[in-house]
Structure formats: C-alpha cells, structure tokens
Length: 110
Length: 119
Image (cartoon, rainbow over the protein chains, first blue to last red):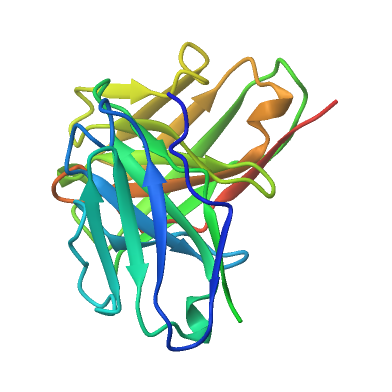
C-alpha cells in the first residue's frame, strides 16, 4: 500500500489554470475509476472536491475538474483564486478492497 | 445537516491502548459505510480502515492491521476505533469520514481528534 505520488507543490497566479497529478499503479488508479480529490485548508478537515475521477459533488465550483489517463489521475483548477490556496490530496480504491491517499500537494496562489 | 464528532483522543504511552468514538447525526447512519483516516503532524492523509454499513465487512491499512479494530453500533449512531499496541508513528489527528453512496469516496468528515503516543 504505497502512497500515490503527487508533486509536493504547485503554484499559479490568480486567473490561471493549474494541474495536479496523482500517479499510482494498475492496482489502484489505473484499475478503477474510483479516484477522488480533497481540499484541505490549514487546521481544517478535508473537503471532497471530485469523486469517481471526474464528478463534482453538489456545491463544488465547476472551476475544479478531474481526469485520468492510465495510472495517472489529474485535478485541474481553472480561474485560480486566493481561496484555492490549500493542500490537495488524491485517493484511490485498490485491488485489496482498501483505499490509498496521495502524498499531498500544496497549492500556492502567487 | 450531516455531523460527525470524534472523541477519545489524548496522550498515551507506547504499547498501550486507546479507543476513539465518532458520533454521527443528520443522516441514516445504518445506511452508510464509514472510514477512519489519520494525518500525522505536517504530513499527508493516511487511510486507516473502513466498515460497511452493516458491519459485515472491515478492511484495514497494512500499517494498523492486527493492532486496530473498527466497529460500529448502529443503534447508537456511533463508529469506533480500538487501537492497541500503539507506536510513536501512530501519533496523528484521527478523522472519521462517511463513505459516499458508491463507497468510493469520503463525502463528509469530522473535525478530528488528536492522538499522541509518547512516553
């Protein structure tokens, strides 16, 4: 159960688009369309932003979108805003009926 | 509104045990799977365990298998995590989270309870 690989940090200017990658294996990310993404502000609980690779829960801005190709999933934030500055974590279901999180990415709005 | 409130955290010596609880409200608890997720200080999230809506199936991360036990009491709308043989590396904020309808994501989270394992 190795953690999924995410870049430690990603930054962008307001209004720009950024993409966070999440790389796993064929036993997790590549094997199932069960990748989810979570936003976490400092000292707060995580919040679900994307589920099942590309679905947004009710109330989540359409500036957030998800996709997957092979063993790598991606979260794109378009029209970057100051409020988007946070940590982002990916998660995947695995072939062992367990779940695994990514290493986490800190998003900085310049 | 969905509420999840964890309790039971604290300071415990290595090798000892501790039990956590998560009180759920605002939804039909017995219809949903539930997870425990932890976060060590300054680190990323780590999935710990899941229990199905009826308690019939439970799965654990390798790092806690054989030491931690997840359980639930649907009559009390409460999720539990019994942690035995605690180690320094178990120090973390422990969150309970509700499994979404598809059991593929975590749609609601509690605010967490801090467990510190130290002598």
